[in-house]
Length: 145
Ligand SMILES: O=c1ccn([C@H]2C[C@H](O)[C@@H](COP(=O)(O)OP(=O)(O)OP(=O)(O)O)O2)c(=O)[nH]1
Ligand SMILES: [Mg+2]
Image (cartoon, rainbow, N blue to C red; front, top):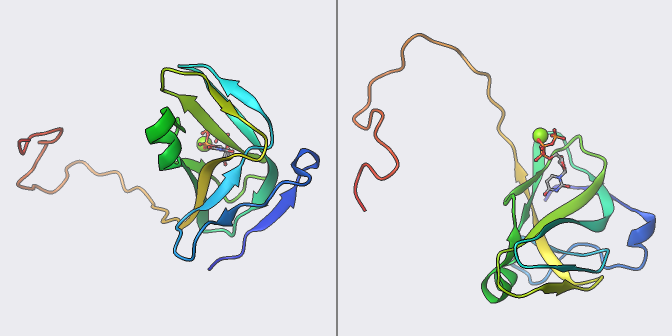
């Protein structure tokens, strides 16, 4: 459990805060703070009505809901979206409609889920040669189907 501070923005008034839908849920469902219609092929940054302060060393991932993806072709375009620990702006959900029908979102609809995660940072060491491996440069299906 980490503690994430959340500030409700004026247009988030009256909305449910992100919440776990079941005891074992990995993600907190987040609702739209605005109504909109996503035409087929369209994308939008959907308001959530809140900003957060994530403890240093952590991030929050914005992930799609599988039901919206399977039933309507609606997903987070940049999945998993990254909320940086130093970001203080409004959390937005970048939704894309990959389906064939317009998708209507009402204010208060659950549109995505938030998953906090620990972040490992790295320092890069530039070298002239990398160690040999059996795989070498093979990738992108090199081991077969
Ligand atoms: O789904 C998302 C993804 C990002 N953000 C916000 C929080 C994040 O900290 C910031 C920057 O995101 P990212 O680093 O993915 O985007 P960028 O294109 O690299 O923008 P920047 O140059 O501001 O880092 O935008 C969201 O609200 N929702
Ligand atoms: Mg960035």
